Image 1 (cartoon, rainbow over the protein chains, first blue to last red):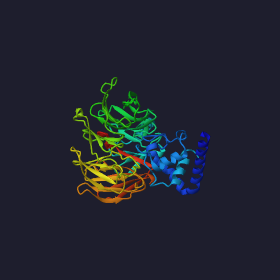
Image 2 (cartoon, rainbow over the protein chains, first blue to last red):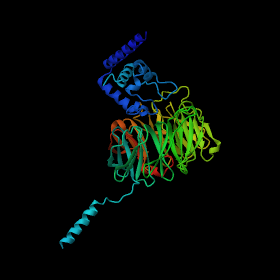
Image 3 (cartoon, chains in turn purple, cyan):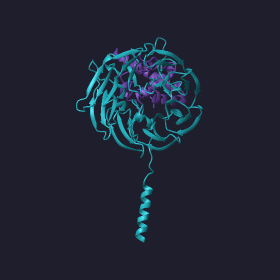
Length: 106
Length: 388
């Protein structure tokens, strides 16, 4: 059962990464990278070591599934300053950012 | 004869090596955050005089000035505290004092520099002359957990005031005896205070709450009265928008008897009666405000915005309380700084890689300087202001 969950998680991640690179145009990818550095960076640090927001290094995100990261980006974390970004980012773009943060994409 | 010639030549060389004497009152620093570098700039000419590199991670960097306005103490996100000589454009001291810091303050007498830290939470205090650490004060909440510290400012005497983000407390550290700092705590001020400010007269300390509506207010002329809650509708309210960037209170605007504050989660700036602390009115603006800053004479308030509206800047007339102009000075305007008497304002346009200078009377652009991903702009007249 646990293995099934892990597999599903891995599949979601692979799917997310595949979907992301398929549907986010290269020019937009550059823009998203910049957004991660600059706009996410204003709380999480430009080097992602954290600030008012938690660190977003690969080892920190390894505890989470790609789906959880995507949901956090789109819906935010109620009760914390992390806002929902869904008005600015599509699900595909959030998936691309999740994969980028988690080290699936360069 | 030969000997005299040599001597004269020597003197000539010596005087050529001597840099021209100058003051620092016309100078300032601009943070080029992605490169860990500062620009030394001159107001009157709108030019860059020098670059200072090697300051580490300068995301969200802030700085304060020594009271002779020659040295800047720069607080980096990576926990670095760097002392920069702006006359020679060089680093004269640097310590890695924590893992992650947010800002700092310099004491009224100029002798101590305090740094507010995220990781580990708390403040560390340094000798301004030598950067030697003189005190380490952890910020531990009632639950025993370390708290991030925000909103640090100098008070009279060798005292600093700051707020514990996780614990929801305001603390005052009195360092008149360095060996035994005295701490006064104000608990239960509210949830998630995200930034704080002190008025220029040093009387009022306000901590904005993110976790609930309102602002925690401490009257430093009457500290025994404790913390009071004001502006219960200040915060997000029911129909709030997502807050894409935390508003900054430190650059807040006092114009006459009115205080101008960025609303949280609304496209509005609040006008508050200073002293009574009640809301007078709200002014609709083009996005979620980050900084609302008054021109030094209080006649105008300039507002910049969070993503996605951060390429606009609006100018509000404080008498009529209307937006008199919407400017598009460049892409991603992160910060604004008025010249000491306010005839010009400098704006950092991060994504245009430029600092743009506007005339505040004509509201026209008068100069532009290339800058790599600029963020904070700090002129040396901050040296003489409480809380800056």
